[in-house]
Length: 322
Ligand code: NAD
Image (cartoon, rainbow, N blue to C red; front, top):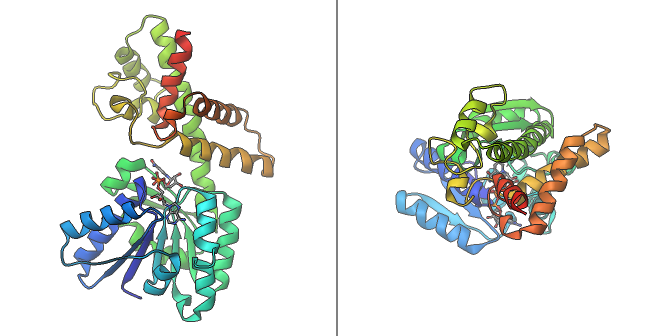
């Protein structure tokens, strides 16, 4: 188990992260063993074909349950959609926690959960994991699919220092900046606050770009003004939602909003922020308004569920034409 790493959840982010982690670890130690698991068979099959195509000598197994992952590997990384899936993977009968309880020798296991999920659920799962003798960190990421592919993600880590130090060398194979934000759940707290800013910011950039066009401004001129003025932000300078507004062709709006960060995931993150705000008494007037707008967008235009959340611009432009 000591030379084996399991990765559970090979979606848009997980497949890129696992590829970087496994390929760099294989370059360091060719006797490493890798294990992948996903609820969708196609996801593991295409990862296996791709990885073994590039590294034919590598040992890579596909397993069907988190239990098999725990029994094969000392280190397990999870990258799942959100709270319900993390609950299932950690707490179901063939999940991580029941397996750790049944096999006390698995106590040295390190769990790294990079999912963005409810902080309170994550803290209670981490407490149950630590109670079995294993280590656990929450390590959500910032940087999107491009950062995952390039290995330049930021990891926002919560957990005990000993667990953080165990996780750090692996996180460095998938990311550039590794922040130890505090105890269990602190990484998720930082991630949820960051995405609260991002979710609100993307809407206001869409509003400004539309208003500018109503005032007769060329989107490319308006974007270059904002991006060199006090309104400059990621949503305007990297993820600008208007095709042709940025000199390069990389934002998702240039591909009909394909790829990037799904609107459904942004709605989920806004919900995580407003929920924890209600539980802690923090006022979020803009966060609540943004959550309502993303929810409304997905009801009105369900095609946008998997498209990048900057597609909120497409919805607002349709409203503007009415
Ligand atoms: P995704 O939906 O593309 O991938 C999730 C994967 O988990 C899928 O392959 C799915 O089949 C698998 N899965 C679901 N339930 C499972 C189960 N019970 N057992 C095993 N596998 C299961 O999502 P994503 O875009 O990769 O995002 C993953 C996480 O990263 C989310 O929490 C998201 O909020 C966060 N995140 C995403 C981005 C982004 O740009 N996509 C950026 C930062 C953070």
